[in-house]
Image (tube, rainbow, N blue to C red; front, side):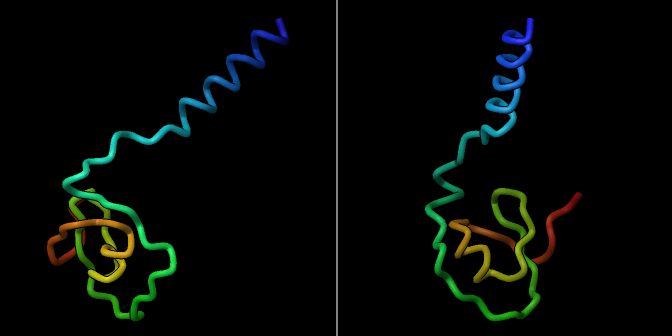
Length: 72
């Protein structure tokens, strides 16, 4: 019984940490060593995430965005 419970727990953890598919038209590779100015000028990425500015969106690998915060 403990074995089954452990296996179910491991399976639940593995499935919860999976990310959905990435749209290649929206997102590319993030740039980990990217440096952006500390200016808050929010943009809404094509991934529906609000970034502090367009530089931060670009560093995250987002290929397109619109001015302003994303809607809820």
